[in-house]
Image (tube, rainbow, N blue to C red; front, side, top):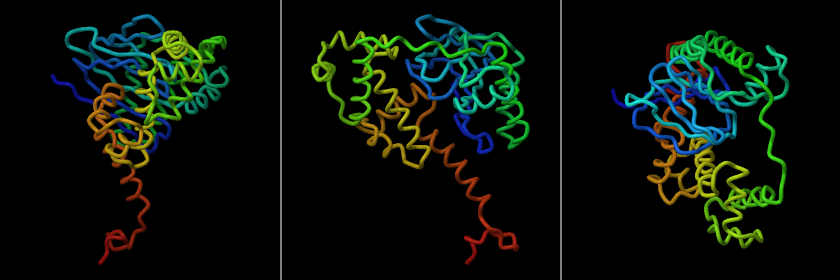
Length: 294
């Protein structure tokens, strides 16, 4: 069977992205998410690097990644892996935690893999309900799944590294790259501007953010491109706005991080927007929408 993926949103689950996918040759480069990753493995095995270690999640397990945590992803067996995933925002998880657990603030997941077939079924039921437009079921089961995972594996987020001179330089480097996303300096230029050496900067940045500056910049560009696509920009417009030389460069990096091409990602967003617009159109009482009458 070939590789297939759908990355979408359901309007009745605000703050949550959804994914169904089967990957065989797919390899996710090191990247981060602004949201939590809750990936329910239905078949095969996924292997991913997480906080310096390589871990695997097989059928019946849930792979869990906290926001802003660098990680990768690839098949652990020749037949690849099939999974469904939900990506709730930190605000969504914090709200559920406050209502159903003793955890306060925005908690984190302690272990990156939990063997729990029940939660795997719950996640896939959330996706099915969203596809069928069953808002009550999707919302209910999402809350049940997140609550269960928090009770099984929730805790305080990992402590942030102590601010050192190297970490301070890394933060300043990140700020420069963010400000100059469309025209970033070379590593040597950036180091000179910050009063350090290239290799010292490289080491400090990796220690602080889990990836070198160029990888972090690509990840940041894709994050911004996603927000622009969400807001209605075309892939070509988003590519230029975030600093990629052309759309093919965005296509390659976006697919390696998000799992689907930017065009497919944008179409799913547009479908949700169009559906909302149709719901808001006033009825004429004669079976037509007012803005379509002639």
